[in-house]
Image 1 (cartoon, rainbow, N blue to C red):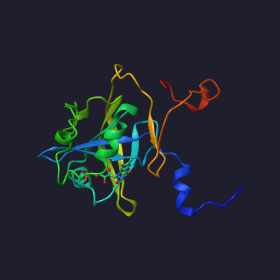
Image 2 (image 1 turned 180 degrees about the vertical axis):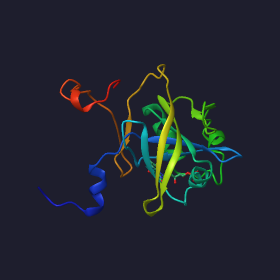
Image 3 (image 1 turned 135 degrees about the vertical axis):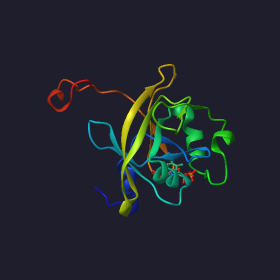
Image 4 (image 1 turned 60 degrees about the horizontal axis):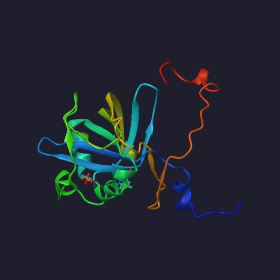
Length: 180
Ligand SMILES: Cc1cc2nc3c(=O)[nH]c(=O)nc-3n(C[C@H](O)[C@H](O)[C@H](O)COP(=O)(O)O)c2cc1C
């Protein structure tokens, strides 16, 4: 083994998958790109890491609602563009010709074209690290998407799409809750 630069460490732990997070601040829909997320339990809890320099942060704090939208490779370039401009200055739904679909339990919209969307409410905010703890309240999937691969951000501006699937369901039987 050879030593690597410390700042490269995060590129070794691939977060997954790239998310588009929609919010509604009471005036307009907004959307941001998030690669730093993780599941927390089997009951639909997730953590997102973001901060007050993003416009979405204010909406998340105020409304305590959002939708996690999961784009496939066809939406990747748009997802990167969404993550390089702020809803403070532009209407990203208009600029990137995004189609908002009504959610059932939250005011933030689902994003058409994504393989799945998860309506969430904010349960807690951990200020020290800008971590939002979310609880899923409704999950949608779009089976008509032609390319359902998940996209992962490596962290250095490059991305990977899912490849081969290895099925170890039987070996993991004791560890998985019913229904998975
Ligand atoms: C690939 C990619 C991943 C990103 N991941 C995160 C993230 O995990 N957390 C975060 O706060 N910002 C992340 N960003 C940056 C935000 O998406 C960006 O600051 C965006 O403009 C915020 O939009 P808003 O100001 O409308 O909320 C990412 C951007 C890109 C392009």
